[in-house]
Amino acid sequence: MGRIRGPASRRPGRPGRRQVTRDDGLDVAGLQRRLAGFAAARGWEPYHTPKNLAAALSVEAAELVEIFQWLTPEESAAVMEDPESAHRVRDEAADVLAYLLQFCEVLGVDVLEALRDKIDRNERRFPAP
Amino acid sequence: MGRIRGPASRRPGRPGRRQVTRDDGLDVAGLQRRLAGFAAARGWEPYHTPKNLAAALSVEAAELVEIFQWLTPEESAAVMEDPESAHRVRDEAADVLAYLLQFCEVLGVDVLEALRDKIDRNERRFPAP
Amino acid sequence: MGRIRGPASRRPGRPGRRQVTRDDGLDVAGLQRRLAGFAAARGWEPYHTPKNLAAALSVEAAELVEIFQWLTPEESAAVMEDPESAHRVRDEAADVLAYLLQFCEVLGVDVLEALRDKIDRNERRFPAP
Amino acid sequence: MGRIRGPASRRPGRPGRRQVTRDDGLDVAGLQRRLAGFAAARGWEPYHTPKNLAAALSVEAAELVEIFQWLTPEESAAVMEDPESAHRVRDEAADVLAYLLQFCEVLGVDVLEALRDKIDRNERRFPAP
Image (cartoon, rainbow over all chains, first blue to last red; front, side, top):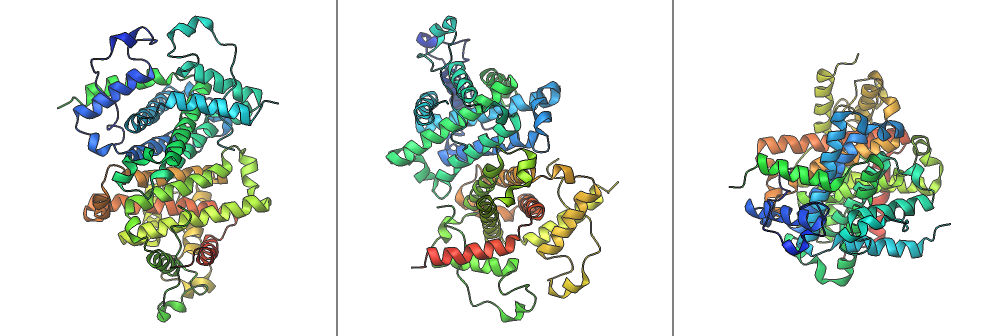
């Protein structure tokens, strides 16, 4: 269920933004629009409270942890060498991003800006040696 | 510690990419470079195994959940009205993204591509009614 | 907040059970009664939905993970040698148990029985080599 | 994998403890012995670092959260009415307890005592109104 209630159908988009994306729809704002459209088309919006989306995000993060839970640090660094594990890692990372973007969308948080501000703050608080 | 071992100092960057960003450094690739630089400048790379970064990501996701854990669905939807909660939400969302990007960086995963592929797949698997 | 909405005031208890406990109140049923009483005395029952308690449990589990997130396997095995870490480990383990017991209480689950049944099942499913 | 690396085969036990249990093997110490035996019989002890067990515990807690993630508070309170959900809840609660007990076992933490101390402390810190 967690895995299904996520992604989004393509919406008309805003052509004025197109030239700034790496690829059509492959920037955060474009993905966020697709995710919102996907949920809307399936009537999932009532389920997408911030509380539920935060829970879903944490569940997906745990599925990422599960891949690594019994591995040594060395094995964990080699996880992409096995095609099946590599696929699982990509898939779960995508799920984490999907819920993070949906969470930020419903709350009006610009997560890229939030991260830039945090990095700026951390650079001042923890100067490099 | 979790909150500190994250963000990154600016690296020289690649001017050829600049015109495709929304803002200087405010795209995923730019933030990923800053995070990698921040960790490198502090000698944190040995700690940044995929296993540890996945764990750190799940810890930050839980800190997001913590904000909402006793709230009703309605209260959770109004969380940005309180400036202190709003700040906390932005901050924890930034932390989740920071660890997700660092995790993807050390494993060579393009998370935007992974999410686009997942949305494509989900649109085929779960056609809108 | 998470840490506060947990434990429970002593209730009259049932003397007939006393002789079967290791120590007064130091069995699962006794702790569960104290936790329920603590929550009731503070009017927290409306917050203690199974959904919220499961979330709180996962938040406490993450706080346990946080202690270990940057440690090597060897450092993690020595965590009780440092008095401050040892205290934190005990404290977070207690929080996990507190929410697990409260969760099971509100749903009428006997968690000891559930675990015994699971062990029985696993012994049949995964015979020792 | 997470679900398998848990429970434990019966060990000889200590008859002197028997009279204090609710049922043969159905107290925390008895379950802890069975879990330790189960892991030992399968050669899993090297995997059972405190770090790994804390991660496994958080993964199981997330599986509990997953059951509730899209439910309203009311639906979450009725989760035991559906036999399949009820089974899943019992099963995941058992998994959480299994990893908590194994975690405490490898670190020498008496989790019942830790919780009793925490309740005592909380009763002093947060007096009932």
